[in-house]
Image (cartoon, rainbow, N blue to C red; front, side, top):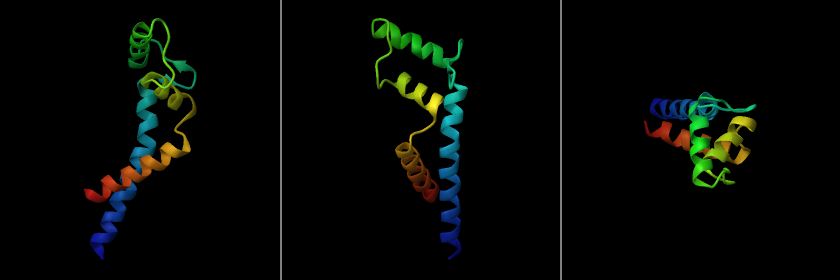
Length: 93
C-alpha cells in the first residue's frame, strides 16, 4: 500500500515538474511573450534557421514551435501529453 502511495506521489511530482519546467526553460532560452530576446540561444537558433531557409523561419520548425510556447504557453493537448509522460516517468523512478 505504501509503495503505491509513493509511486503516485512520484508521478505527481514528475508531472508537475514537467508541466512547469518546460515553459520556464523555453523562456530562459530566450523565447518570450515579446518575441525572441536578443543575444540568447533562441536568437542564435532563429538566425541559423533563417539562413538555412533562405531568410525565413519555416512554419512548424523547432524555432517556430518554441516561440509559440514562449509567447502563448503550452497548448492543452501538449499539457496533457506532458503530464502523462511526466507521471509515467515518475512512477518508474
